[in-house]
Amino acid sequence: MKFDSVIIGSGLAALWCAKYLNDSGQKTLIITKNQVWDANSFYAQGGVTMAVDENDVPIHIEDTLKAGSFHNNKKVVEILSKASLKLKKELLEYGFKFSPNVTREGAHSVKRVYHAGGDATGRELHKFVFKKDKSFLLDEAIVFDLLIEDNTAYGVSVFHKNKKFNIYADNVIIASGGIGALYKYDTNARTISGDMQGLAVEKGIELKDMEMTQFHPTVFIEMQFAQKLLLTEALRGEGAHIIDENKNRFLFEYDERGELASRDIVSRAIYIHQQKGHKVFLDVSMFDEEYFKNRFPTIYYKLRNFDINVPYEPIPISPAFHYMMGGIVVDENSKVKNFKNLYAVGEVANTGVHGANRLASNSLLECFVFAKRAAKEIINKNFKTKFKEFEINSEELFKNDDKKYKNKLREVMWSKVGIIRNKKDLNDALNFVEENIEKVGRMTKLRFLTAREIIKAAINRKKSLGAHYRID
Image 1 (cartoon, helix red, strand yellow):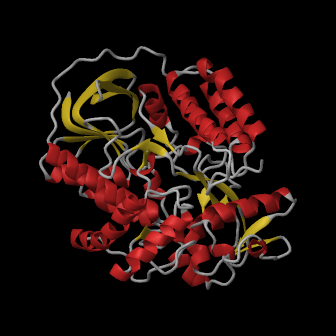
Image 2 (tube, helix red, strand yellow):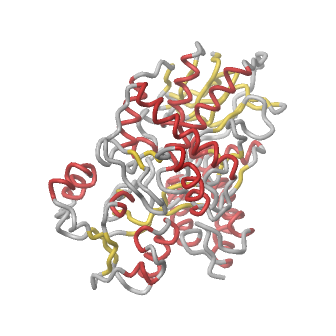
Image 3 (cartoon, one colour):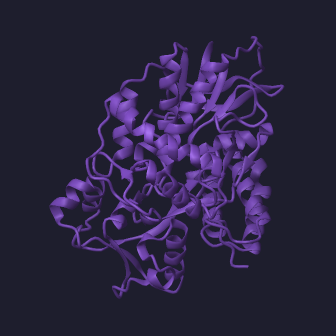
C-alpha cells in the first residue's frame, strides 16, 4: 500500500494540507485515531486571528511576541501575520463565511479574531473543509511506528481492526495535535495523548520548548468526562469578569489588564487565589440571555445541562491544560529538521510562532498558514522514495494495567508539572516516569516518553518564562 503522502491526524492542519496536495493530483491518505472530528481544532471556540489590514500586521506581530515572552522566532511570526491577510480572502473565495462581528481576546491590542457559529468556529471550519476533502481516509487506526532510515520517512505502521500493517508513502506529514491526555484536567479531544511526540523521542527527532505548556484559565471542570468544557476567551474579550466568592475581581492585583492579561498570567492568578482557599467564578451576568444563547450556544446549552443558569448564575471555573507550544522542530515550510520528506503541522510542530505562550486564537491561523506551506513544498520538491520493506514492530501495544498507569501519570503531571513548578516536584515526577516506563504497553510508553521530555525541559529551564513558571 503506497501513497504520495500520508497525513497522521484529521484536524484543520491535516485537512488544509490535504486540500493542496489533492488539488495537485496527489494520492493522499489521512489516518486518524478515532473519528475524523476527534481533533482539537474541531472544538476550538474562539476563532481565527487575522490581521485587520496591513497597518495591523506589525501590531499583531508585537502582540504575538509579547504574549510569547519574546521567545518566538520573529521571522516565522512575520510570515504568520502577513499570510493572515491572504487567508481571509482565500477562505472567502473557497466559500466559507465568518460572522460579521470581529472580536477581541486576551493580550490582543485590537479586535482581530474572526469567528463563526457563535462559539463553534473550529467545528464550522472543520466541517466545511472536510466536506470538500478528496483524500483517502483510514479512521479508528492507531499509528504506532514511523518507518525511518537515513533521514528519510518511508511510511507508518498502523494498528487497525486488530491487525498491524505498514503503509508506505513518499511523504509523511505529522498532524496529530498536542498532549492533553497527559494531564488530569484538560480541554483537548479525547484522542490527543502525545503519542507522536513520544515517537519523535524514540526516533531521535528533535523536540523543542516542551516545558512550554499552556493552561487555559477559564474551564468548567465539574464534569465526569476527561475532556473539560472550555469557556472561550471571547467571553472575557466581550466583557465577562473573573470573580471570587466575595465578588472581588482579584485579577487586577496580579496584572493591570485584569481579565485581558495573557493566559499564563490569568491562569497563575486563579491558581494562587484557589490555593489561598478562594473559589473562583466567571461572571457573565452582563450579557443579555438571548445574545448569550446566540453568541455562545455551545457554552449556553452545555452549562444549562449541568443546571447552571447562565448568564444569571456565575460559572465555577479552574485552569486546565489547553495547548502545547513546544513540539517537533520544523523549518518555515514545516519540514522536520534534518529530514528529507518528513513534515509536522499544527500543534504537534514547533514552528517558533508561539514562543513561551500562545496568543489567543493564533493556533488555527498557524494550522492554515503552515499546512499550506508544507503542501506547497511537497508539491514543488516532488520527492520520491524507493520502495523499501520494513519489519513490523513486535512490541505489545497494550497491557492490562495501562489505564492505571495513564491515570497515575495524569495526576503526577497535574500536581507536579503544572501551572506552578519547583525542582523537588519536577524530580519526583521524573522519578515516577523512570520507575514505571517499562511496565506499560507501547502506546502508553510513548506517552511516558513525551512526559519525560516535558519534565526534563522544565528541570533544565531554571528561570520562569511565559507559561513555564518556577517558584524556586
